[in-house]
Image 1 (cartoon, each protein chain N blue to C red):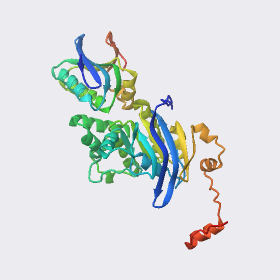
Image 2 (cartoon, one colour; image 1 turned 90 degrees about the vertical axis):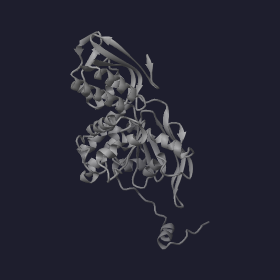
Image 3 (cartoon, rainbow over the protein chains, first blue to last red; image 1 turned 120 degrees about the vertical axis):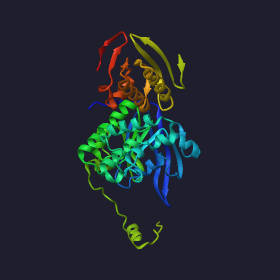
Image 4 (cartoon, rainbow over the protein chains, first blue to last red; image 1 turned 180 degrees about the vertical axis):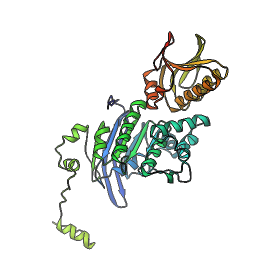
Amino acid sequence: MTTTKKISSEPVIEVQDLVAHYGSREVLHGINLSIHDGEIMVIMGGSGSGKSTVLRHMLGLNTPSSGAVKLLGQDITRITSKEIDILRRNIGVSFQGGALFNSMTVGENIILPLREHTQLDEKTMQIMCRMKLELVSLAGFEDLMPAQLSGGMVKRAALARAIIMDPKLLFFDEPSAGLDPVVSAELDELILRIRQAMKTTIVVVTHELDSTFRIADRITVLDEGNVLMVGTVDEVRNSKNKRIMDLLGRRVREIKIDAEEYLNRLTGEQVRETG
Amino acid sequence: MGELRAVTYKITQHAGYSVVHLKGDVDLSTSPIARKLILECIEAKHSVLVDLSEVAYIDSSGVASLVEGYQLAKTNGVEFGLVNVSQAALDVLQLARLDTVFPIHASLDDLSKVMR
């Protein structure tokens, strides 16, 4: 496999001092990220690390408590809904569960963004749809309903819809989850080919190590709402950071227990100030 | 030479072909005009070559227009091919595996030299 790793220095995605809460609980503690034009950035971390929350903020689905998220130079926390609609024409998202409309055929799902945002001829749209289905190995499935597809097929159909407009920015949420190893490897290969051909900037949120090491130009490792490290595949693999080594080695993390705080959590008591 | 928003074009005649020269970006906003040019030539029963040497970027809608042109050419019994395909365009054709479908000529000077 050959990959192109000539990355422009121009950042097209910038996350600056991003702080986020769920209720009163702070879940992101000042995240900074800079992703360059044509780069494949994998955001990895364990469950609860904050990776999906970062993704939701990058897509403008969550509003941060503070900080900025800039896509293609525009701070999406400060632009109007109309401006974000225009920006979203340059963004494709492949959600973990597919997020296809069950009342539409696969083909109608894939064409939907073209109908919403372009004036293309119907025949052009149909050919584009079939091209994307070919690309994700779902040729001939356009007339089926999503309920008739397997989980892996739904995921690939969702990818076809994500790339139907040839977006400048492409986001994947757990692309390999639930796929068998062969299909997962094919999807990784496809991600690399899309980047090579379309010069797309790609952000992948995953906890799949094999996939991460196959596709990433750089990896951001998140842990408990903080960036532990940003580095190349080799830099992350060779990191001496214990938490990263735990993640890569799939070792159970050591949880330090503050006995009094733990007791208070179990009993619902407020933590008493000491000293 | 006509002008689109991000692409320019001209049509020349060469060895019995109408040659559609495209220059710039063929994308969602400009591909409908490229499509119209190509289909009009084919509907007039001309054999068509599309020169992609100066295409900096072509997206799926541009490629779909080429596919439609090729299909219509077959229906109308005329020839259709691509010539001087830029690397940027070739990358996209290869992604869609269409480099194995279209007749691709290395240059106008040597149409007998078919790359595929």
